[in-house]
Image 1 (cartoon, rainbow, N blue to C red):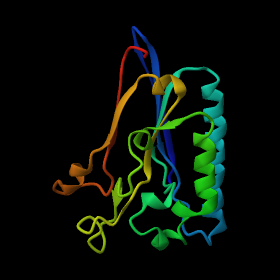
Image 2: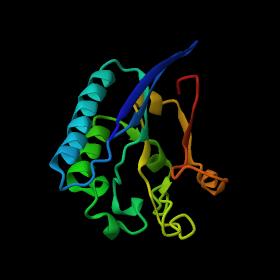
Image 3: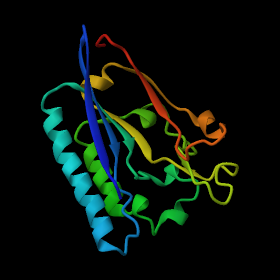
Length: 178
């Protein structure tokens, strides 16, 4: 697991937008206590960092591969993920705690439909069978949510030649506060 965290601040005449790009640890196999514990500890550190950032009341987007399937609707076959770190109760609870600090989950703010995925494995025809999961998320601080106008999952990218197993999740933010 090679977790990554990169942040940048973009300034406009209307104020700053902080974007943090995340790649959270996978945490598998869950019976390897070091890997799963590392994932949960990483998520706890992210939660503390995010809580501190929220106190600054700035527009903040936490974007990336969280390696978390938040709800059963976020997997074509949730039962296949029961033994996976991405769908463990502790992982899902850590993600919920992060969201509950005051973040808006961009995709779920525009749709609660099942079948909205951001990842399809390369094996067993997962893409062709739409056997996907949603593990890439954009979380918006209240100040970013005030500028939010839309979110989309760019699923068509997965059909390109030699694609990634992930597809982009995109948002549109107004440069002027709402």
